[in-house]
Length: 131
Image 1 (spheres, rainbow, N blue to C red):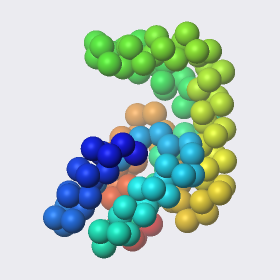
Image 2 (image 1 turned 45 degrees about the vertical axis):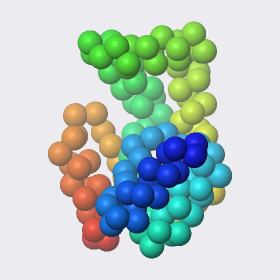
Image 3 (image 1 turned 90 degrees about the horizontal axis):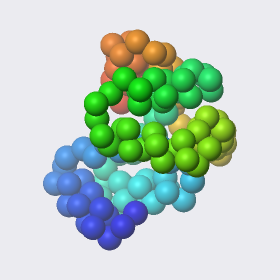
Image 4 (image 1 turned 30 degrees about the vertical axis):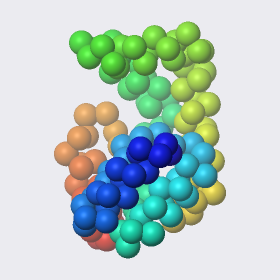
């Protein structure tokens, strides 16, 4: 995490606010850094992975890129395609599963295409300790 991001997150957490990182992290040290920051500011830390099966996750990434006008999403799709496309996404998926294995307290929630409301409900339950 960069110094600016660390400072912003620390300020926000110290003020009693939540910080949500909807990101892909496939390195344990990245996660432990965020966890340490939360603990240092007295905040709770929730590690939750929304997960579909491997092929569905790959297909969803490609579908999202094909069906958007968002230049940021299209840019990242082009970069990924140049790097190896579906093979890279598969490796990313496998790396994520390894991180989950190494961090057994991680809550893994199913996230199926089109099940936005159900996924949100599961996430809300996990965050409130009802999962």
